[in-house]
Length: 137
Image (cartoon, rainbow, N blue to C red):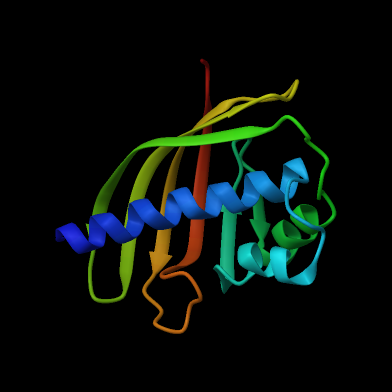
C-alpha cells in the first residue's frame, strides 16, 4: 500500500460523493452524461449494504439514484477520515466517514468501499461494493 493507492482512494471517494450530491440536489443537469458520471463509476457486480442492512444490486441502486434527481435540493455530503485498509494489484479497500446534512432524514455513516482497479474506468477505480453503517451524530 503506497501513497499513490491512498491518493487514488481518497480522490475517488471525494469525487463520487460530489457527483452524487450534485445529482440529488439538482445542481447538475438531468442528463445522461451527468448520470453517467455516477453510473459508469460502478462495476456491473456492484452491491450496496445500506445503513439499515438491506443488500441492493447495482440495478436497484442505479434506478433509485436516477429517479431521485433534484429530490434533495439542500443536500450536502461531506466525506472525511478516508484511510486505505488494504490494497493489492486488483483492489483497493477504503474506510471513510460520510456526513449528510440539509435534509430531514440526514445522517452520518461509517463506510467501507471495495474499489477495483480498472484502467478503462472514466475516473480511476470502479466501485465494487459499499457497506454503510449509520451512526448517531
